[in-house]
Picture 1 (cartoon, rainbow over the protein chains, first blue to last red):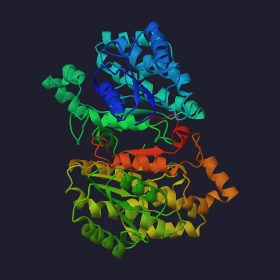
Picture 2 (picture 1 turned 45 degrees about the horizontal axis):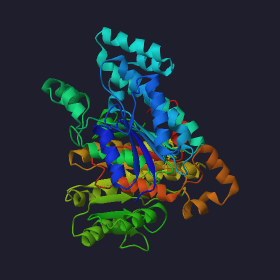
Picture 3 (picture 1 turned 120 degrees about the vertical axis):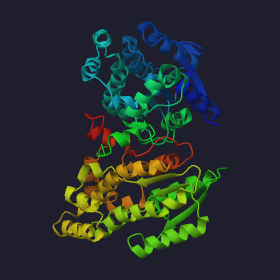
Picture 4 (picture 1 turned 90 degrees about the vertical axis):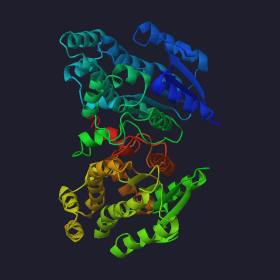
Length: 258
Length: 258
């Protein structure tokens, strides 16, 4: 039995649910957060929801958490995707950071996406990184209105990657490993309804994200990696974007050791 | 209890010994390989030793292994470092690949080094990648003779990284995740005798490899990550160079998401 308390956002479904379940089966306490079916209900697209998350987790944990797994995200061609995936995730990490510093072995991880290296819009990425949420939301709306809504999700994740690479240095000074896991296409209900069930979209995505180990991949493989990154065992890795994508990143950037 | 058979090279000390011990404690069978104090004795700097490794592991395993952890390596300013770290590691991976293909969930991982991104010599790296071992050994000797022997070790690891990024695509076609773990400076006996015990060298290395999470880092953190990469859980990550370095890579390349 593991004597650790974890927070998982996006825990009601998909990767978040699988990760929460895995951590619970290891004997840990898990505080599940989502907009429904969770211990702490919070809509991370809004300032009020972000405050509700911090208040709810503080109350549920007593003020100390050992690991944070920030999964909550959406893939819609909408400004909400930027508000949730980028600003909501950063608010989650920074908002719960004080609770992590109370742990003797604190860890945090966010979920990114392999699509960040495939289809992001640099303008939207830069707009996010100004940290002006309304401006970034407007930039996302402009992309949607010009027919490039598909770029919003990858851009929100690439912006998160860039933010996290730098933030990890500050977190490391506090002794908190902070990493990202970037999945390829995995078999979640959301992925099925969003594009896997549509043969044409499925073929387009499969071509853009070549996954020699399988398309789609197993959700449990992502949950397992997320669980390792926030375990006490991970005392020495930080600031990494960990591609768990069936080989897509290695295929697309085979000539680079990054 | 885990019903898997693992091979660990370099298992007599340091990261290899820690990894072998960890896998054994999980209940797995481990075939320890090294030049001494091991189940299979083999000097991977020579063709004869590489053949002895394959023959010995084949005999000890019955022809099927589930995971391979290629740790064997040295950090001397010598052509032996290129022969072992690059050519010996590739011979290990390719030589034992047929035994892995007999497993329902095969995995392989090699140990690289954070130093590969800091201090490698591009000429030696390219020489290795011609796959002409004697030519690469001659290039290493030339570096040593010109007073740049310190570049040999990082170069052997960067060459391994580049080889592995491409090889992983072929391995993925066979369903075998193949990754590398690149440690920063960790607290092994070899690291102590090589440079940690010498204040001046220790300070030089610490400056070149900034590790906000600790210098040196804990060996068990590397062993834990290696063990995860070859576990059945890792069904979907391949071709990755996983920096477990206390934040050195993230510090040195903070402006890049790679």
